[in-house]
Amino acid sequence: MKTHFLADTTVLLGRSMRHIFRSVDTIITTAITPIALMLLFVYVFGGAIMGETENYVNYLLPGIMLIAIASGIAYTALRVFTDMSSGIFERFQSMPIARSSVLWAHVLTSLVANGLSLVIIVLIALAMGFRTSANVLEWLAVIGILALFTLALTWIAIIAGMAAKSVDGATGFSYPLIFLPFISSAFVPTETMPGPVRAFAENQPVTSIVNTIQDLFSGQPVGSGIWVALGWCVGILVVAYAFAMMTYRRKIN
Amino acid sequence: MTNPAGIGPAIQVQGVEKSFKNLHVLRGVDFEVAPGSIFALLGSNGAGKTTMVKILSTLLKADAGTCTVNGFDVDAEPLKIRESISLTGQFAAVDEILTGRENLVLVAKLRHLKAPGNVADDLLARFNLTEAGPRKVGTYSGGMRRRLDIAMSLIGQPKVIFLDEPTTGLDPEARLDVWRIIKDLSTQGTTVLLTTQYLDEAEQLADRIAILHEGRIIANGTLAELKQLLPPAKVEYVEKQPTLEEIFLALVGNNSKEPSGDRS
Ligand SMILES: Nc1ncnc2c1ncn2[C@@H]1O[C@H](COP(=O)(O)OP(=O)(O)OP(=O)(O)O)[C@@H](O)[C@H]1O
Ligand SMILES: [Mg+2]
Image (cartoon, rainbow over all chains, first blue to last red; front, top):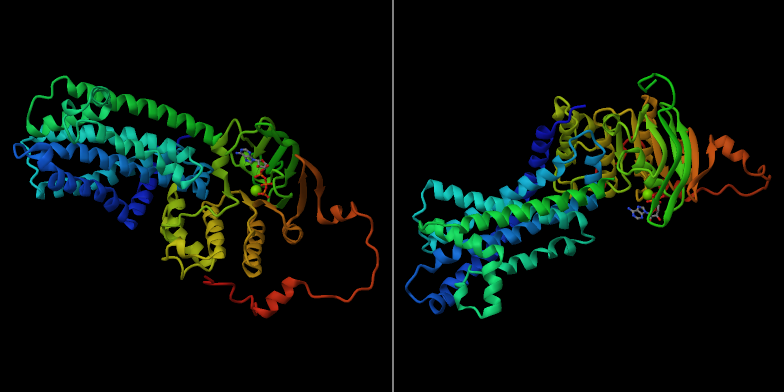
């Protein structure tokens, strides 16, 4: 019996896109906290941190984007949780559709929603003086890394949404993820940090991703850093996906 | 009449067992449902009615026993079953952010029907929801939500419909609406398995009634057969009191011509 994975996913994607465009506030909220952080760091702390030598917005933007993604995926967890608890998930599961398309629709929606938030953030950053020498290829690389990062975190969000017992449980998991960029090279260079913190900061995924995007934006060679960044993204993605599928299977049997 | 072989029961349940950890919910359930009939599964809270319905609609796997729906085995051919059934769960499974019409279109598209818009409009009319159709379901009353929920389940004309406590939480008028819908379905040849805690609901609707208690079916028969299980009624002279339902319906002026358009 053939299922209609693509057709079903498209229909369900249309559904959650409607959700997004009927609550545009979720996109704005996702963008607003990172933007506020960006304003704060550039106009309040920026002088103290960087002096006048460098364009601090350029330095900051990659980390700000990662914070936006980390907070944006909480809405995916929320949407998955709502589907689970409202019974609509069971309705879909009892219908002759490709079962995994229910999850994939949420994943694609997360990519679109986070993409929109990021566009808003980049536009604000441009207004604040963000400049880049990146060419089309380098931009594509940046977009690819951000998409991969979003994908990885989205699958974590889907686990949280499926496993959660309450709304708070569904969204709470994202707080540590949002915090991670603060202990990385996103705001200040890691060299300024005390030993153990520095060791953590230099070896956690955010730093390699931030450094890679900073290099791509400033037209510097990315070196082997990009492989570390990609390795982290793919690694998290694979593990999260496997756990999500495990949770999902437990859910549907 | 409705299954592939053209004969045999629409639903057949044999020796079904299901436990959640240490909780042995179903301990050997057996029953059959004839095609085109209405079958009521009665039981108190926690009896396992929802569990049984979920097993039959391929959402849960039984630990033991066999179930067939329309002649298909739930374990072997779940996809075939999903094509010929629909489930209205215990809690209205509607999308609050979409409009009523969009909910129907969504299901019609997922069932790969042609002209999903027409399907939706027909159902809206049939369920007195045409006016409410363009509104977000979040603004619907409980009764409207339930009607939409059932409407969504009728899309694609499934041969077997599972209704898990279809009238719980509805006011008497809305309940009568739902009853009318269920009777219509059965008249058109659809097999209906419904669960309920209301004895009068089973009495009103069901061709056969089964009582699920402590994991087993302890009684199964027509209303008349079940009545015979009890000692014969004593003759007593009591003033005929109107039931509360009759009083309520009289006071709110239930004129069944206009069955509850937009009570929100
Ligand atoms: N997923 C689950 N995990 C653990 N226990 C469960 C699960 N689902 C149901 N149960 C338990 O199984 C028992 C039967 O539940 P079920 O929902 O089937 O009862 P029900 O007859 O539908 O009750 P109600 O009338 O309240 O809807 C209950 O004690 C319930 O707590
Ligand atoms: Mg129940």
